Amino acid sequence: KKKIKIQFLLNFFTLIRSCQKNQFSIEFQVKLQLGTKGIASHGEGRSWLLVVAEELAALKDEVVLQFSGHKLDKKDFFGKSDPFLEIYKSTESNEFSLVHKTEVVKYNLNPKWKRFSIPIRTLCNGDYHRNLKIICYDWNVSGKHSLIGQFHTTLAALSSGPGEANRYKCIHPEKLAKKKHAYTDSGEVHLDFYEVRPVHSFMDYVKGGTQLHCSIAIDFTGSNGNPQDPTSLHYISSHGYNCYEQAILAVASIIEDYDSDKMFPVLGFGAKIPPDGQISHEFFVNMNPASPYCNRVAGVLEAYRNCIRLVQLCGPTNFAPVISHVAKFAATYRDGSSYFILLILTDGVITDMPQTTAAIVAASVLPMSIIIVGVGSADFTLMETLDADTVALEANGVKQSRDIVQFVPFNKFMGGGDPRTARLRLAREVLAEIPVQFVSYMKTNNIAPRPPQTDVTFLPPDPDLLKCQPAL
Image 1 (cartoon, rainbow, N blue to C red):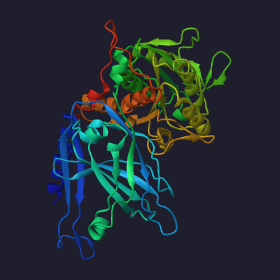
Image 2 (spheres, rainbow, N blue to C red):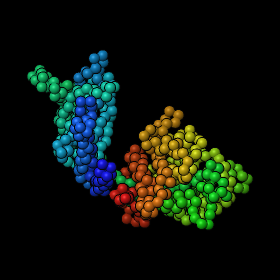
Image 3 (cartoon, rainbow, N blue to C red):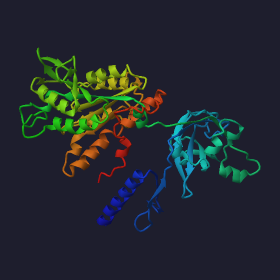
Image 4 (cartoon, rainbow, N blue to C red):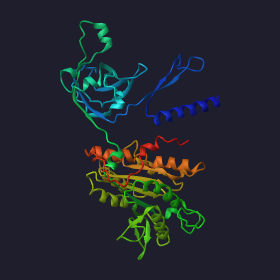
């Protein structure tokens, strides 16, 4: 049975990877057969996981929609309904798949839901005549939402925009069957806004001349260990690279492909620096404020090795100063002509969490992304918090406007196996969110890419192509 399960998982993940590589959409339908005491046991029946794949159309556009409800049925005995909409597309298997759910509007029989955008590939895979089912529910805290009514339409019909043709009667099937002639509808849903917008990619902006600027910040705090001790993360040896050197070589070489001029300003933090031994949380690693740039990864390594011999590791570990340093430059380029990436290499013991959170929240409105690479085997729980993939950061009552942090535990990719495979997986992880964060800034600020430049000498690899390369 174990062999069968392992083979099933291998086949399953091979299928998923193939679908992703060949631009298929994937839908999961779990069918659980119930027995007398709930979900069926081995003797009572079988449960199925059905995977439905459909080839995606080569279409980048998205559609922006807004709906409103009018005189919807009152479902709550002591109050009005709390309506929301669910939009389903028909699939090739003659089923319906959920593609969007609106927010709930509380205590309102005439709700106006917020505008939302959805890729046309997701909504109908480019088929404007594909059947769409829109269901209106009354929200209940129990999770058992009450049906108000439903109707069918197509994107072709919606494309005519607001008007009489896009005012739909919400029909409750059971009420219609019971009352027949007496029942007309459970209210109406109107289309209030329709617009199709092109979706621009990361590479569209780069081809249009947007410059990418990468800065590197290195943790020189005492928690890394005495550099004279072979167990230190900063130990310099003639027989190999220490953990920070390995991270610089591996991660900075990936980032180098996306820096327009290959010149990196390299910052250090958490050390006593010459000549007076003052603690600094924002100093240039090459010790040259007039020209803080290091030429390519080789220059970064050289500056790091010289610096570790000149400074005294100290503390505490403060991220906020280096984040604010890069944010000052990003704040002067809000027109889409430049985008800034800060790479922080750290052992993960952070001591200014409130200030760092505030700095990230402030930077989230700027053309800027932060990649935090965890070096060593410390507890990186706080780094996961800063990543904020599930819960948005908040400081002084203000939430970050978009996610700008990606955390990568370097040790995860330092095990055995093929080094080329490890580097590919590392590159995927490092660049996993940068294109999305980049485009989200441009989209939020209504910045379209400029026409492709014919004289562009710098063109980095397309990060999306990394997703299509097999890593197993």
